[in-house]
Amino acid sequence: MSRFLFYFFLCAFVIVSAVSSDIPLMINYQGRVTDSAGDPVTDGNYNMRFRIYDAPTSGNMLWDSGIQSIAVADGVFNVLLGDIGPVLDLPFDEDYWLLTTFDGINQTPRQRLGSAGYAYMASGLVPATEVTGNVPWSSNGVIKAINTATTGTALHGYCSSTTGSSQGVRGESASPSGYGVYGKTSDTGGWAKGVAGFSASNNGMGVYGFNYSPVGDAFGVWGASDSETGKGVYGIATATTGVNYGVYGTSESSIGAGVQGEITTTTGSSYAVVGRNASSGGSAVFGWAYATTGGSTAGNFKNSSSGGYGVYGYNTSTAGINYAVYGKCESNQGRAVRGYANANSGTNYGIHCTTNSTDGYAGYFTGDVHVNGSLSKSSGSFLIDHPLDPENKLLRHNFVESPENLLIYRGVTRLDAHGEGQVELPDYFIALTLEREASIQLTPVEIPFVSAYAWGPRFDRFTIRGEPERDVSWVVYAERDDPVIRRLGRPVEEEKGPSNKYCDKGKLLDPESYGYPKTMGRDYEESR
Image (cartoon, rainbow, N blue to C red; front, side, top):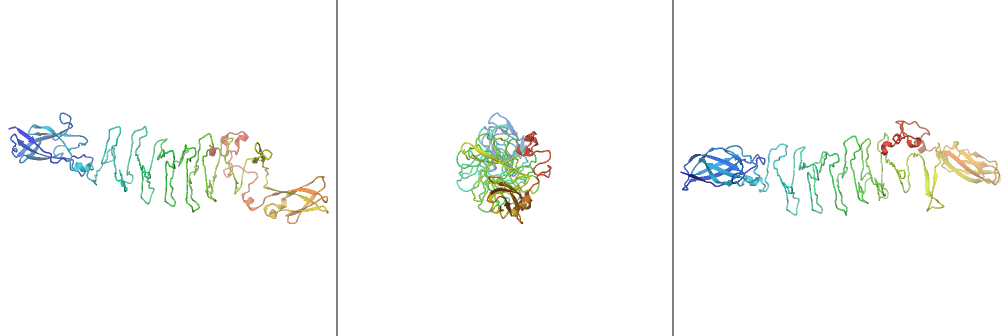
């Protein structure tokens, strides 16, 4: 008697093996077998075989249970595909068809497999579904989404709520060295992104990183690059108007930093922070400390390198009026630029300025300049508009140099009827000078005559003697001897060497003037 198989899919639990270790990797399949008259077959065990194909006819066989002895009662059988036969490890990322063979007869047509139960839950159709698994580090994950199209998205998370703080995609990791969200692109060219974040909100964030650990070196966002010319973090503001920022950092800590750049290499000419700006009126680096109280806030500061820079400004433009570092302060007691070398040993600088331009300036000041300390220079002069032709000429007078810290006092005194004249020097003369070593030069006015002088007992005044009723021009030369010059004064001749802060042996302050190369200059390394 011919037998025909009539079967019905009561449940089909289709599961991918990588999804969860808690979900059975099987298909629950149930059917009913009748004869040609529609009566159930006799109870007993029958040979049955189940095969899965990738097409309704022909195609490739993807799984085979082999011939199995299956119990049938009142015409009904029930099997777990994957429990009988080999493990059912198909990815179930495409359509499949099941061919059943009963007692040697193939039952046609093949039945298309559907999903239900666990499969729906695994696909995320059930809210708050939790999918777990044990997957070692590889290209796979507990959940893996693959998109083979040249456009589109492999995994798309979308929160449609217009209020609240919902997340389209949220990544979280409890691993001490893991990632909440890990994005990777294997393309070696173009502008591929490991992670790309976009926001249409006028107050939102394209990418938001938040680390709420109260201790340790925690990072809200951490960027790293192995490229020789890459960027660990790269920010760009494409709007051509308004006040926007490529990278904006803010900190609420009393000792924190809005943005901190750190270089760990101990060699080379690397930069903790590099700012570049193509704007005709912008800033490569803008530091703003807007606290209205306190005395130690700073826009940018701090460097611990033995040869580095707390702030390094570099402007490559060869034309126009531009600035490597520009400081501006609107406080009535502030500083536009303040340099402070805190080390109490070695050769360091509060501010070090160098120019290689023959027409430029290492430092240019408009306004009063005060030096609270000793001042050394190679040459000096005053330069003013020429008093006789201020629109067309300049007038330069050079400084008078001396091995002494010299003070000059001068005047004209008329002698009385007895041929004497008294000159009283300022009341600070004795405190300021080596008064006993001061010298006086006398010059008779108009017709020459014999003149002389005599110091008073305290050396704070002197008497001129000569022809009565005549004028005498006098000049007093005295060397400083006050507490400041005694502390800051330097010897006339010094030996060069490591202990000399001005110049080491074998180096010159101005090598080119003596016919030596620039490389022998004391400031050559700093000025390159």
